[in-house]
Structure formats: structure tokens, C-alpha cells
Length: 291
Length: 335
Image 1 (cartoon, rainbow over the protein chains, first blue to last red):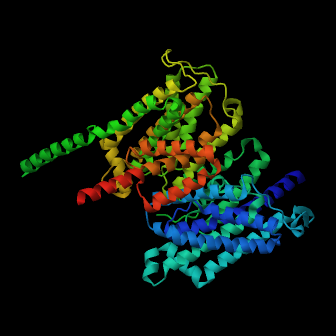
Image 2: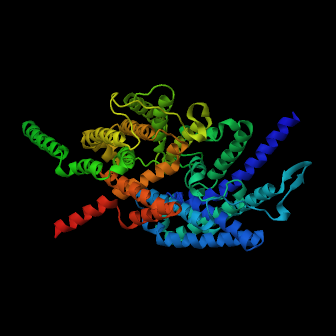
Image 3: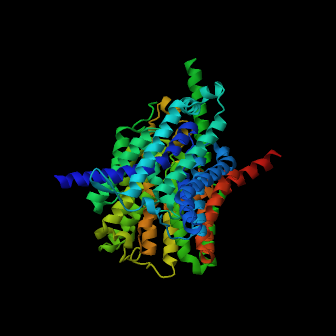
């Protein structure tokens, strides 16, 4: 019985840590989808950029973890702003196919650029000494880094939700997701709003990619390899929703951990099957608005 | 009153039928790709193996064009059907059935079955959810092929395929002479099928669904059924293409089901021009020949340049090579 209990706890723990990472990376995608209906398949490339910057800054410049993480976020935000101005902006409100093609091109370019800059081998994250080892919580040992991940994620998620519920900016975003034209009519500068939301989403993705480097290996194929996870989280959660992706990330994180632990011979098979089943039941996702 | 309108209707009807017949008639430039293919057989004798690969991939791109270009179903998982076809033919060839044409037929049927079953589920959604679901179907099959290694060979790939000569006469040789003609012939049949679909009233209604799904619902077109039918047909053609690649290379790997496969195919189609039936004939050779050239120099940067090129095409040269050509033609005519 205690065996069962300990297995369940450990699955929930690791699943929760993974869910935090998936949520941080995917939430920006859900918001861009909801705001402008923009299918940004290259969202994972920002997470990859964040992961690489963090690892490289720590390894080669010997920067402390916190500083490197902050630098990674700033670099990715700047990068996303440049790309938004140069490329994304041209396709707002355009054909879905063009958006898919353009962001697919970005993914391929990111694969090539990462191989060129950092080589074909994936990079591993070395957490600072403080976050290594085990930590004792209620008489059980947990890996420190993942506990830190959960704590960080919980803080960020709370801040994000409060920001969207309580601030003027959050209200504007919610209004624009619900009805873009009405929001414009009321004098909300949706173009600027979208730029900010895009940059914020990319920053969060960079943070998720950096923190989550020990779940999602930072290699050149990052944006291709994990695209399916990000899309699952967004689609199962419901487009444009902020909380939906969190529930979806929890489902994916916990069930992925559970199946990899209990039935490793099936790999990721069950995650995909569950995803299809949920969307068969609710095609608009768990928290999607009904048409 | 009724007489008049019915006579008008009849006259219109004849005009419409005539217009359809004209559209459907073969035009001189449609012979160009085939003449070029035959000429290349004699001009580039040492490249027959590559040529066979190109023809099989054109068929694959053609099947994707039916979905994306004509029915407006944007999918990221088209490699699923390619891979299923390749594995179907491969597993047969590795387990004692060596006759190539029946393998292609079985590959088409299996791929069509998978297309039909997955289409029932994924076609209920649109946009990002549809993208995700097509991707998940391909990922699911890839995981299946990876873990079911007793049949598929897992990550080592399926080896030990034996293929009999076609009709018992034409043996697959090392230089790809047979493969070249074989793939070209199958591509020709596939192209005829695709062309007939595109110019049929069924094809027209697919274009209608792409342009305005709600209106097609409103005029009573069976939208869901039409989408499912084209999804199944497209899957079958992709399966045939997979079988061709499996037979001519005698190897099937997990990469036949990968997202990068679907992505590359979309890129090839974009370069040529989507929704134009001939985009595949231009984009695929351009891409594969360039890849063959450049990868000898610099395989690592291939993806980077091709990605940049794709962004460039979408942002500045919409419609790919054929699109630019069409616009050039229009401008010349309007002068």
C-alpha cells in the first residue's frame, strides 16, 4: 500500500513539474491564437532559444543561474519583437495556410541555425549547486531542482492569472480575445496589445525552455520534436483560454510521466490516444468557447 | 413563363457543360513534364535512382496538394499515410510476398483505410486543432512503428526486402533504370486520377468548401462526406508513393512517418505553388535536385537556407514559382 502511495506521489510530483514547463511554454501560443487567430507553429523555437541561451551563458560565460535566465528571457523577447515586426505582422488576419507555411519555414531555419551555432548534440543544463541534490518535504525526499521548478511555475502562474484578472492590460487582452472588433471600437490599441502579448508569450516560452531543459532536451530539433506537445496543450485546453492550457498541461504532464513509468514499452502512445479521445469528446478543447 | 425559364436553364446548362469540357480538355503544356521526364531518362543516365525518388515524391506532393490546395484541409501529418504505405509494402516484401504491383495495391488500400479512420476523427475540427490532430495521428503511428519492432524493425528500419521483377520481366537494377520508368508510369496514373478529381464537379465542390465552408453547408452540399472522401483518396495516393519509395530503395525507416517529412513536403509544394496541380511537378524536382547538390557540400545548413527560402516565398513570392509566373503573365496581358 505504501508502495502504491510512493509511486503515486512520485508520478504526481514529476508530472506536475513537467506540466509547469509545458504550461509556461504553451500559454503564449494560446494567447496569440486567441487574440489574432495566428497559428504560430514556431513558438517552440523561442523556447529553444531560451534554453540554448541559458545553457551557453552558464557554460561559457560562467554567469550565475539567475542572471543567465534573465538574460535568456530578455534576448528572446528582443528576438521575438524583431521577428514580429519583420514577418508576423505581415500575415495578421491573413490566410491560415500562409501562417502555417511561414512559421514552418521559421522552424526549419531555427533547426539549421541551432545546428550551425551550437552543433548537432543536445545541451544539458547544470543546475547551480544550491538546486542540486534532494530536499526533504514531509519526510520524503524530492529532487531539489524539480521542487524549485514547481515552486517557480506556481508563482508565475499565479502572477500571470492575477495580472490578467486584475490589471488594465489583462482586461484589454481578455476583451480582445472575446471580440477583437468590439475591442478596437472601444479604442483599445489592439496592434500594440498584440505586440506586447507576443513578446510576453515568447518571454514565458524562453523561461519555460530554460527551466525545463532537463525535461525537454535542448537540441537543434527542439521546435520540431516538441511541437506536438505544445499543440496538444493548446488545443486540448481550448484556444485563447488561459486556464485551459494549465489543465491540459497537467493532464499531459502527469499521464506522460505515469505511462513512461508504468508502461514504458508503449512510449508516448497513450498520450496521443488520450488527446484524440478528449478532442473526440470536446472538439473545441476542455475550456474552448462554443461557437 | 415556366417554358421560358426552363429553356434558359437548358441553354445555360449546355454552356456550363461546354465550359466544363473545355476546362477538362488536355492542353499542350500539360505534356511538358512528361516529355521532360522522358528526355531526362536519356540525358542523365547516372541519375536514374534520384529520378525515381523524385517521381514518387511528386506523387506524394500531388496527394497533399489535393488536400491543402483544393479542399483547404491544412495538415501536418500527411507523412502518416506515406509511412503506412511504405511499411505495408515493406512488411509484405520482407515476409515472403515479392510481387511489386500487388504490394502497391495493398499499400493504397491500407493507407486509404487509415486515412478514412483518422479522417472520421480529425476532420470534425479546423485550424490549429486540426493541425494538432493530424500531427498526433502521424506521431501515434510513428510510435507504433517504433515500439512494434518485431514487425517493423523499430528504429533500425525494416530490412531484408525482396522485390520480384515487374510483370516477371523487368528486374529492379542497381542503376535505377527500371525504377525510373516504373515510378514515372505510376505517377502518370496518379496524376490522371488527381486531374480528373480536380476538374470534376466533386473537385469544384471541394474548392467551394475551401473558399467558404458555411456557404457550402447552406446550399446543401454534404461537406463532411466530401472532405472524408478526398482525405481517403489523398491518403491512398500518398500510400502508393510510400510503397514506391520502399520498393525502389528497399528500406523503410521511422523517418517515413516523421513531422520533418510532412514539413519538407509542404515546403516542396510551396516552392512550386499550392493548389495548381503542377506545383508538385516543379517544386519537388527543384527541392530534391538542390538538396542532392548542396548536401554534398554542406548538409548542416540545408535546413536553414530552405527555411529562409520558404519564409521569403510566403512573404514576397506568394504562389511559388507558378504563382510568380501567373502574375507575370497577367501583367503582360493587361498591357
